[in-house]
Image (cartoon, rainbow, N blue to C red; front, side):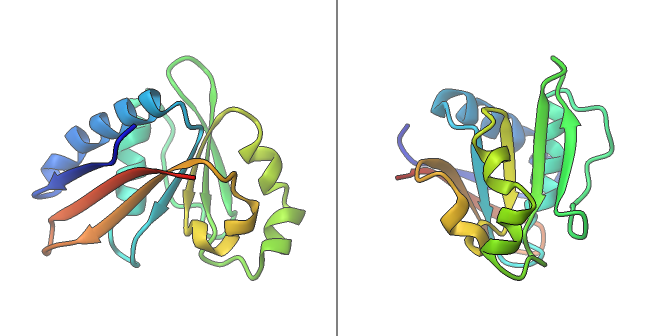
Length: 145
C-alpha cells in the first residue's frame, strides 16, 4: 500500500473518511492500526466512525481508564480499541496483555501508540491526524515497517 492522504473538511465528512480508512485497512492486510495525533485531533471520533462503518452497534468511546474496549463488528468478530494515554510504561501495558491482543489477528485500534511502541508489531498501519482548522483535519495513512 502506498501512503494516502485524506482531507476532512468538517465533522460531516468524518463518515466518508472512515469508509476510506476501512478500505485502506482491508487492502493493507494489517490488523494493528496506530492512531497518532495531538490531544483533540479527533482520534476517538475517527475510530467511532470507523467502527460504525464496520458494523459495530455498541457505544464506541475512548477506553482512557479501562485501556481497552472490545466491540463486535457486523460479522461478530472482535475489534479491540486501546487508549494508552494514561499508561505509565510499556511494562504496565505488557502486564495487561497488550502484546497478546496485537498478535490475536483481530483488528486492534491503538490511540497513543508511541507510549507502547516496543510492544507493537514492526509492521502496522499508521494513521496520523493533523489539525488543519477548527473542524478540518488531514489524515496520512502509511504502513510502518
